[in-house]
Length: 488
Image (tube, rainbow, N blue to C red):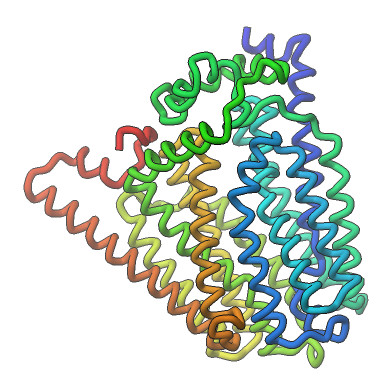
């Protein structure tokens, strides 16, 4: 019967309902990440096209993106769910277009700061891109379509970086025209979302009739894992195909206060789980430092090897680091590591290696060393963030992913904003780029020490429990996600 429903007379309709939005999302994701100018953005701002100083770029312009991303993340998250994704997808695409139009047409510090605001809006709106697909396809296809959408964004980024480097090195194209190509790509990405179907439901404000039939309490119960996840989403995806076909009038609606109450109760429930809390802590701390290194590494490269005096190869480096990071993410599932036991110590060790990469980039003052250590730094982060993602996901059902990942990102941005305000912004210390990277290296050293202590404490507790004749199952439950967070 299931095979008939999938491949029978209605099979073609089901395939098209999956293929059509996925294809449009992939087209939009590819072109929005195809940015040949991205690896040379600092060189463009500090070069003859804009003629801005290092202090203006580093201490006055770049911090705006961090602050805007933080300020807009939560409102955009709520707006994405309330407006059912598609309008925010259009907002993201249009924000990218406005960003690159301003980069081409204006040159003052204020105008560049405004362009950073629109880029921050586009970045905050990415939540719509990665959550839209869950509202229009059955849960049985979540893993596949997520893989497609994430892979195509990495592929677009790699192609853009490589294209920019080839045009710069071989065709001697000016940086201005790389921005023109990026604007054209963003304009193409703006077209695809218009043809996406408008979802009839969302996770919080517009819930399916099944979840609403017993009121908000029933919805909250499903989100707290009190019902088996397969039942809550429909057996074999059949129920979801019904709920997706419901008219907009039959979809239950929650008010803002009810949604905030659900989010807060879910927040408290999720972060009571100690393994999830540990991985989320590393996620927030490391992502903060990772963003800072990515945001300002081009400034460091510009100091080590000025683009006006030498050929630069930033595009090749970004392409290689993106592809190597994607490869590390793919291979992480084959590593013979028991993350539930050795997770904290592994995080400590690899965070220490990331520390050494940052110190090496800062102190060795050689562009090839900087390039190599940057590639290694990104690969290690991609590996660990992939581990953190599936370790956290093992404790959650699908409805909680957006909340936990959003909270982790928000905390990372909050820490990054504080770090930017104190270290980078001209309102704070306004330090030079070499001193900044010394601080970023020390920051990752602190992360390494925190998780070294946590790992040693876990091993000590485990050993003492074994010596006292404690149950091995009890010890394991303290370190491994059990798939049901409410039991923690």
